[in-house]
Amino acid sequence: MTDVLVVGSGFFGLTVAEQLANDPGLKVHVIDRRSHLGGNAYSEAEPTTGIEVHRYGAHLFHTSNERVWDYVNRFTTFTGYRHHVYSTYRGEVFPLPINLGTINQFTRSAMGPDEARAWVAAQAGAALSGGSAAAQNLEEKAISLIGRPLYEAFIKGYTAKQWQTNPTELSADIITRLPVRYTYDNRYFNDRYEGLPTDGYTAWLERMADHPNITIGLDTDFFDASQPYNKSATVGRLPIVYTGPLDRYFDHAHGPLGWRTLDFESEVLPIGDFQGTPVMNYADTDIPYTRIHEFRHFHPERDYPSDATVIMREFSRFANAGTDDEPYYPVNTSDDRTALKAYRELAEQESQVHFGGRLGTYQYLDMHMAIASALSMVDNVLRPGLVRG
Ligand code: FDA
Image (tube, rainbow, N blue to C red; front, side, top):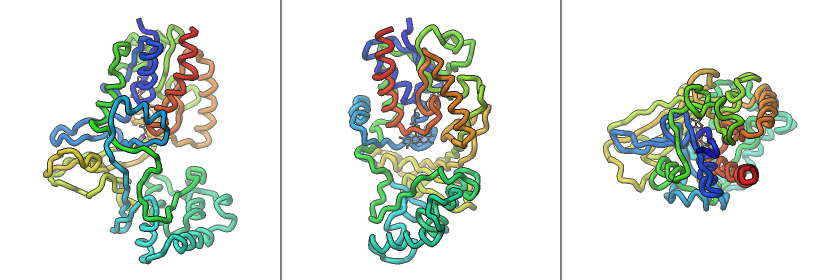
């Protein structure tokens, strides 16, 4: 007997399942169309080297949310990993996010913080009268924030490749700010807590699901009428938490919501170290990929082979609706926002179906945000409703 059905075994779905299974002790069945649990955070050992690879793109855990940090520590310990990113531009490597080191290397100078701040402000001020409020497109907005030289080196090519679109044709509101640090601190995240799960993401995710009240059905698509937990067999019969794509649930009644996807090209190389760092961005447009991940560097504490390494080149493009393209980042055009509003209205009418997670709400969520939002749904909607019902 199942009390609740959870569609999708990513962080959102597993958090809901784990919480309801423990308190009030409901029987939760989780289905996922993929052959593994964990959603996009899933990772696996590359078979020839044993190096942990993040199949759906690199995942770095970070949060300042105390409740989330306490919660995740119930299932895993974390390494002391601190994320850093570098960017190759015209044959030279610079630290990111843009900081005093980046600016001084770029301008071949030794400016202090105030001088660098004044230099950036002068570049930005020279660019556009009316400032960032007057910007008509992403390029103008970026230049109004950091000036043309830094924009052209570190933002323009990378953004054009991410969106397959010239930044002059992208909306200004894609970026609200471009942080520049006037110190040499190039730690990527500002959060209080950061690290990687000591024995990997999959072990963490499996521990979340390891409860006598939780059952899992893999290779099980909610829209496949031949499996017992399909949409028409379950909606209205038991409470459902749905974390699949919002538009798909409603048969794309208001058209497909736009997503960007990524293509990954992995390679095992017969060398101990390819790039000396986990992530290298490529800012030049003549290099087709946006970045290269080298997974061994996510776990320097592990005993990985010294004569082999795994790299993954990342290519970005628009997802084609109705294909197997994985939806990764919402495009969020004004048409998307109109359709989203219509889908939200439809979702509100589904009294026994609760839409959550990044696909179910059409928004980019970091892992800690997906977990926080699942905990809130359990506290504010599911526990009160299910216990009362
Ligand atoms: P998620 O997508 O993980 O899970 C949804 C599940 O629903 C999937 O397993 C899917 O198969 C299943 N599903 C969909 N339709 C279904 C159907 N019809 N029937 C059955 N199952 C169905 N975050 C972070 O904190 N640090 C980071 O470094 C990164 N990096 C990163 C890189 C990339 C490329 C992306 C796209 C995302 C990140 N993230 C991240 C974000 C992270 O992936 C995200 O927070 C979680 O995946 C959110 O978990 P959800 O459960 O919401 O979705």
